[in-house]
Length: 592
Image (cartoon, rainbow, N blue to C red; front, side, top):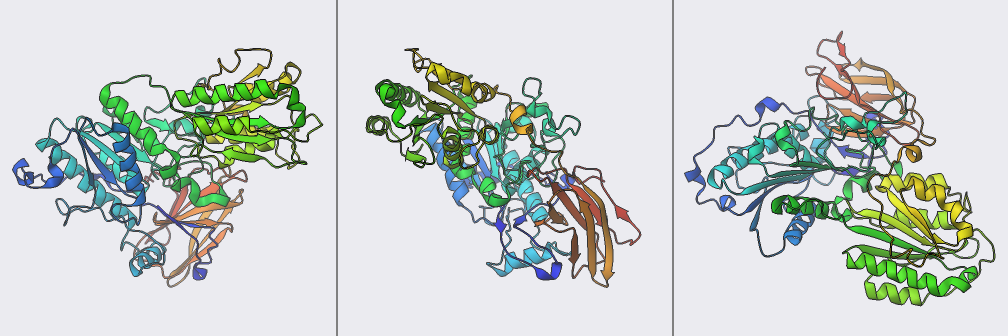
């Protein structure tokens, strides 16, 4: 699934971005093919038996062996190592001619080729089934079901791991609807446009969701790493149920990055593509591979990776404590590295005197370099109390590449309090909200006793802690927060009720054009036409040209609030019978 920035003026659409999305798939067509005998696969290298067989489905418009495929397989083989078990991979669409006439095509949109351009235009008219996304998903699922069923006939003792990203994730989740759980060892979906998490449904009375109330939430068994507690359904609604049977408990695991517009509720207008495109860099593939590794070897309660950003106050008032504080920072870094974690190092004082400085990040910090960098820290300026800890914390949380599934912390070492708001306008609520947007990031502070009270709210609301310099064992007892932090107060602060689209109306405006008008209390809405392409509209009017009135045209809108949270998708269909306008129940599950 990819975003493209271009315009189609004749549709009167003002998109901020385009996303290739989604056709609701007819489950009855999947898994109905007759199966060949196992003997017919004896000469097929894809059916060579290994301990683990990975079946992978790629994203929209990607060639075989795409970058996401490379990163996922690198992570998977890297986690398992070169010893046991033996592993092989079949990427859907690889076999010439496909299996049983099905070969996953994964079409894309854009203007790079005629095929993509044709797909894009076809998505805007009701006859646009050529190169359709929905047909691609169904064909990919048919191929996957056929392959897995026959592979397990040939290799009954092999463990089948299914994995897919974006459109490929939808292929996997659709395939599971027709596969017996006994045939699948593990299923991993990343950024699935049909993800469904009932615990994320918004409650207008509480302005929250059950998933945000972590003390009482009942989570879906397949929720692996979904930091956004408002994530409820994918951009197309969701497969209901997403997990077709309890036989998939512990096997199906869904990953959805924060501000991934395809599966999450939070929408970042400034970074439309970054959330959905970040799986290959975020560590999500490594985290998922570790889950499969632990499942394969029967390992329970494994310790998550730790990501710790050390934030060092370098104002001159630290002079009397610099020796001890440096030693505490080095001990903290050594402890994290010894447990296989990652460390980043930043310094700060007051923004009016110096900027926040990154000394090394999670990819460049080593045990040796961190020790040398900390010992080389010098103090300057800063005769006042407080300092710019809020701005520094916000900056480092924004720019660091936190690992998916890791326990994440900022460890602040200072002798002073902080400006709230900071000189650049960053407030403690901004820091708290960003902390929970990421996973959360817990805040720990080592400071003087007289400054400890000012950090109580920041640390308690992120499930962190305050240590004082009089406690000799403070850093040795330092630990990263558990996953039980409650983000409700931080997320709900200043968050209004999610907007809803109302008065959705379709009407013909000519022999081959259609008008759409609606009211939206939010600033914009995500648009799909015939469940194929999404545009982001900042207007409440659209005219679609070249409509084939011999077919139904369905338009869906997902409202977005002024705080960038996506609401439930609502649809209207202009039927071949002009008197018939159908408004399905939300969310958009494809059922009227």
